[in-house]
Length: 236
Image (cartoon, rainbow, N blue to C red; front, side, top):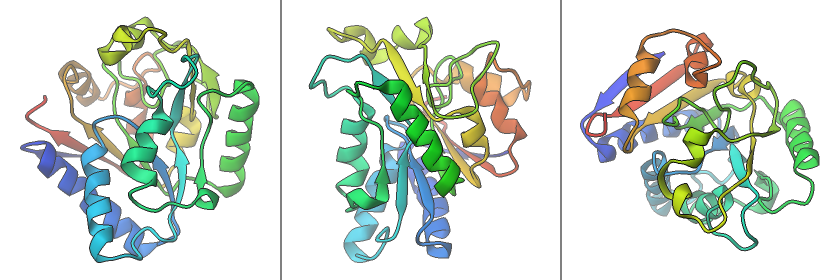
């Protein structure tokens, strides 16, 4: 695990873009795991800006979505899909045939998760996986637990997740999650972990302890051979 300290969000995003561009230049059709949320949003903006001067950038990129909320009211915009579409899929011109996603309003969460797992089993592993870290140390929606599931699955959300940030203000908050499993994440060829946003300082400090535990899922990244941790120092 390599930790890179950058002075602010802009520089953190620039550093992340350097890694992403190098990977795409080397393998234009790589399988990219896109995460929602604020931490990687600056990276996506830089990717979209670069595409304006280099139209073929990301023209062969294949994309899979990391996770999704479930149980939201119909039409809710508090979905990973809404976030990812607006910040990544549309600005980068990712066509539907190059994007594998999961519907936040699916009638068959378990079945759709099984389909995602089958896709990753056939088309994976992920070449470049984008991650953030939760205040409780979750990666994707793999929450602290005695046991973790390796493949894409329906998951129970921790109280610490449901009580954090904007989720608390929702009229109908999510009741479950659908997420890439830790096994699929750890099979990724390269992982970029962005550390930014309020409330992440304690989680980051715990990660640096190098104590690996399923009760702190992000610590499992110490078992991976190719992880770049990109830190916004103004947030931690």
